[in-house]
Structure formats: C-alpha cells, structure tokens
Image (cartoon, rainbow, N blue to C red; front, side, top):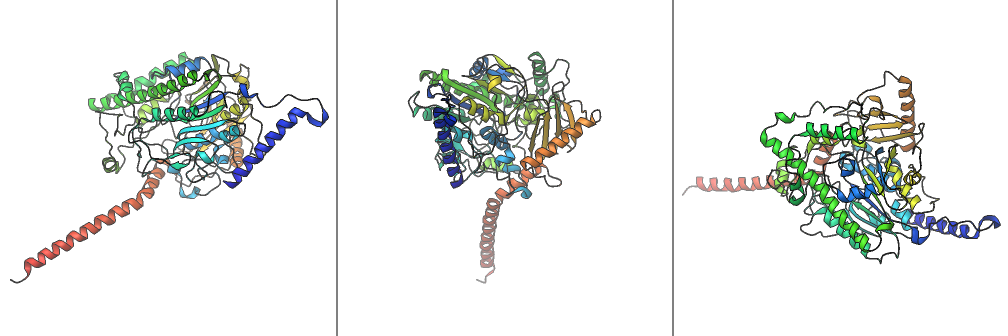
Amino acid sequence: MARKTARRKLALWAGAAAGALSLLGAEGTSAAPALKTPERTRPNIIVILFDDVALMDLGAYGGEARTLNIDALARRGALFTGYRTSPLCTPSRAMLLTGIDSHRAGAATIGEVLPPEHRDRPGYALRIQPEILTLAERLRGEGYRTLMAGKWHLGHGPGELPDGQGFDRSLAMDASGADNWAPKSYMPYYREAPWFEDGRPVRMPESFYSSDLLVDRLTRYIDESPAGQKPFFAYLALQAVHIPVQAPARFSDGYRGRFDAGWEALRDERVDKARRNGLLPKDAAVAGFSPNARDWEALSPEERRMAARSMEVYAGMIEAADSAIGRLIRRLEARGELGNTLFVITSDNGPEPSDPVHQRGMGLWMRLNGYAWREEGLGGPGSLNFIGREWAEALAAPGRRYKFYVSEGGLRAPLIVSGPGVAPGRRIDGLTFVTDVTPTLVDLAGARPAPDAPAMDGLSLRSVLAGGEGPVRGSETPLGIEVSGNAALYRGDYKIIRDMPPLGDGRWRLYDVVRDPGETRDLSAADPGRLKLMLADYAAYEARVGVAPVPEGYDMQRQLAANVLARQAPTLLAAAGIALLAMAGAGVLLWRRLRRGRAPP
C-alpha cells in the first residue's frame, strides 16, 4: 500500500510537471497546446459491468430480455461485435480496470479453482498488485471523483479493496457472488456475503434487491457533489445474472411461456438472429450441444416447467437491471449531466453453466441457509435459482461452450460505448479485447501518461469510436488469453484454442473465427504452418506475462469441489466435534440409567 501511495504521488507530480511544461513551451519554443482536456469538456464516465451475460442477451444484440435503456444507449453510440474478454470474472475485472493482462496485474484466475501449486506464485495473488495503476487511480490523479458499487472480487485485505485502489467512495461485495435479496452467501465456499463501504465492513439491510441497491448507492455518491463541479468516474458492477438467478416477479412474469419450447429452440432462434444481424456469416456452420446435454423432449413436464421458469427469471433479472440503469440515466438528466456522460456497458464472460443445487451436500447446506429450489417463488427471496449448462449453451449462440472455457461462447461478449466522442449508430466488428477499455477511457478523459507505471497491454479505441476506419489490431498482432489451463491466441482472422477437461481434451486446435465463429472446422491438419507460427506466438505470450502451467490431471470442477471442502473443513470439524460430544454425553446418560437399573434394591 505504501509503495502504491508513493507511486501515485510521483505520477501526479509528473503529470503536473508535464502540464506546466506544455504551457511554458519546451526548450524555449513557443507555447504548445495543453495536453489535458479542458475541465468543462472532460466527460463523466460510467462503466456498467454485467456478470455472466452472453453476447446476445441484451436487446441491442437480439436478446429476449427487454433492455430499453441499454438499447437506446446503443443506438446513440457504438456496438461492438468482435469484443472478447476472459472466461472468468476476476481476470476480466483486473484487465477491465487496469488495461493490463491479468497475469501481469496479479489476478490470473479465481480462488475458487486455484490449485495449491499456484498459491503465492507471481500473477496468482488474486489481487491487483501494488505497482499496477487502476483506471480509478489514473482518473483520480486527473481530478475525477471515483465511485464504485457492486461486486469487487479483486483482493480482500487492507489496501486491496476499492478504497485502496483509487476509489473515493465504494460499496463493494467482496466475493464471486451473493444473494440478491439478503446479505448472505450463495455457496458453501463463503460463510457470509462480505460487504464493505469505503473499505470498512458494513451492515446491509435485511432485505433489498441488488440492482436497485447498487444503482441507488451509486446515485447517492454522484449526488454528493454538485453537478458540473468535478467530472466523475463511476463503476457499477452488477450481480445480474450471476447465480443465484433472482428477480422481482413483476419482471419475470413478463416472460411467461417465452421459453417453453426449450433450449434447442432458443439456440436455433439465436443462430437465426445472428445470421440476420451479421454476428454470424450466412453460410457459416454452428456447433451443436455438447454430448452430455439433455434432450428437452426427454424431460418430464415438471422438469420442463422448472427449466422454463428459470429462464423467465433470467430474462427478468436482465430487465430489472436495465430498469435500474434507466433510473440512473434519468437522475443524470435531471442533474443536467447526461449529455456529458460516457457509458460503457459490457459483461465479464460468457453464460454460467453451473448447477449448484444438485451438488453433493447442497441439500443440507441450503436448508441450513434458508434456500429452496422449487417452482413456486423461483427467483424470489430464498430461491437458489440457476439456468444450467443446456440453457448456457443456448445463450452462447452462435458461439461454442460457455463460461470457464476459451471457446467463443466463453469469450465473446457484448460491448456498448455511448456518449461524448462516440459517433452515433456505429458498429465495430474488429477484434477488441477487455484490456482496451482502460486505455480508451484514459484517452477520452484527456489523462496524461503515468511514467512510472507498467505499460498497458490494451489499445485505445478512441479513433474507431469517433468514426475512424480500419482494424483496431493489425493482422500480424497476436493476442493471448489464459485462465486455469484454458488458453487461446488470436492473430488476424485466426484463433488457436486449448480447452481443458472436463469438456476439452487439452489439444490445440486452429480455427478461422471470422468465417467460422462457431469453431466447427479445425484447420490444424490443413494449415500446420499457421498452427506452428501461432503456437510460437502463444509461447512468447506465456513467457511475457508469466503463465504458470496447471498441475498434471488438473480439472477445474474437481478443484472447485476440493477448495470448497477445504474452506468448509473447520466448520465441518467443529460440527462433527459437537455431534461426537453430544453422542458421548448421550452414551454416558444411557450408561448411568442402565447402571441404576441393575443396582440391587
């Protein structure tokens, strides 16, 4: 923390010195234009991050949920169709907020799936490292107020929460997820839902709804300063639509019957929409469901009703978030600041396939923690709702697979940028990456470079947002990604991919993802030279960022189960000890009674 504070002061001093030199002129020349954008023209910036939302979930991309406010922003701004992120939340968030690869930033994966061999390795501390500047730190150094509300999951101790990473005000939930109706955990890995305000533990209301709570708190932070006095950067990290999938019934009920045809029908619908709106070439093939997917028609009527209702809640949760975002937009309009506010809306990864309810031991844990899984009240308070792998595969269309994997269904996500400096009605198809967000916003805010900070990996999208032509990345520029052994590298129109078990086999494959975004035709045998070149690119990426190889036989799902058990071991041992003491006490009482019964009169 001390190193970070010192570095921040040096960056501010260097920025101030650069500003003074720009006014005086260098080496006696005439005065040069100031590098810093004038105060009155610097935009407010709001980054809205959904959790586990698929590429086509939002209405602007053809999704089923009604997202009228987000769609309006998309029409007034730029809609990206070639944006990729990481397949897991913590690495994505680290890259989003720093512009630096997740391994370099210190958050290469999530603690829930971390093998013991990776603990304390460089890049695997699961927190933003002291030498890395966040977007909030960069903008606060330029006079911005910096505000945050929502999921953090980027460090736990002093100096690692948002208040130690450049945010003036913050309400942060420091876990991979939490209940949306009450301050409690959603899985045995966490004993509680840890909420912090400005770095201090905070007592949450007994009941709330997460999207409303987070938007209300962020709005309160914005209102703490008069409109126009200082620009602000606000980071809204929604819980929608992470497990538990929950929404007010007034939103979920609006989708009654919408998903009754099942997941095969929904995937077919999305594929058809993707062809019509250009997300998928008209003659391109798409992958089918994975071999272990269930046939919708083979389900019982009760199972189909439950599955369809889970998706109704899913769509309702997205609409509920959009409704809350609408209130934020209207508040900015009332303050007279909407026209000078830049919005970034995206997701941290593809859709979530997990089924927490049917895991071993979850029935008891759910009863002890006030959860149920039944059609009545599904998505309401006390409901541990999820959509499961088949719906996730349907939602990932036209991509293959989903969250956790580096197939296109896990990486390809929505990105909408709208506001000052963005040409309206713009569609950007070129390859862009999550690390591009911070350099773009730093550029649009007119922030000066921080000379002592590590260089960002991402590229500024300012030119293409303003209407410029040409690709964001050249065809010879490689872009690597790795999370827990799952790895990919893009170069021009091509991508190599290695998906690990349980769905993958650890082999490298080559795809032309421009003509075959469904990843249906492996070109490894047909183009071995390209595969060899891109494998060399990937090896260079691994060496540059510090990727640690996963242990032999590593399986993400098995590691999650082992880590959950390890986290719960003290509680389980304590419970077992209490049970043994109770049994011993009962045995002593029984022995005494039997002894009294045998005693002579």
